[in-house]
Image 1: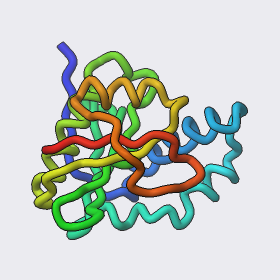
Image 2: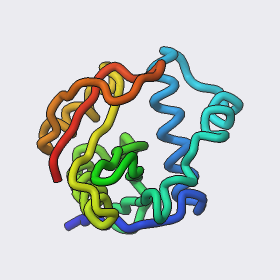
Image 3: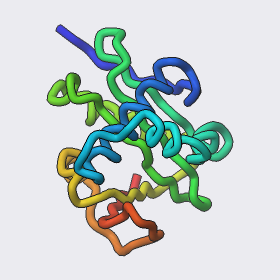
Image 4: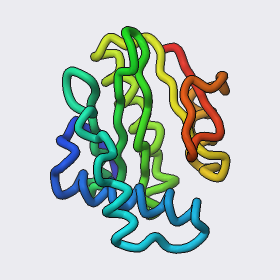
Length: 159
């Protein structure tokens, strides 16, 4: 039987970095409807604020399926009591194994540890797998709490 484990990890470890690159590659490629280049991935990750995903402002986690890095995500405190779910990603080869739910559970627990009582997130309409995971996990559509070029739908959940 295969199992998932999710633990906090610095965003700049080799596994975390590779997962963050894969995440950006997939979301950018889907948005542009063509493969992202290495330079575009580098540019997208430069100055993306990931360093805020560590105490006291947040947390970054890596999920491993039978020891292999297959998922990641982060929690960022926006204000007292409210955390944002960000960079949630399960590599395609690991999808359908239950990792998304385990990952979300760990991220919600991390948010509670940061004293959040509510989790919010924004995403795009074309990221249908992620949207389905959020809805299955109890997230409901909410009014926009922020704006940006890649934000089309917002979700929230009381923790």
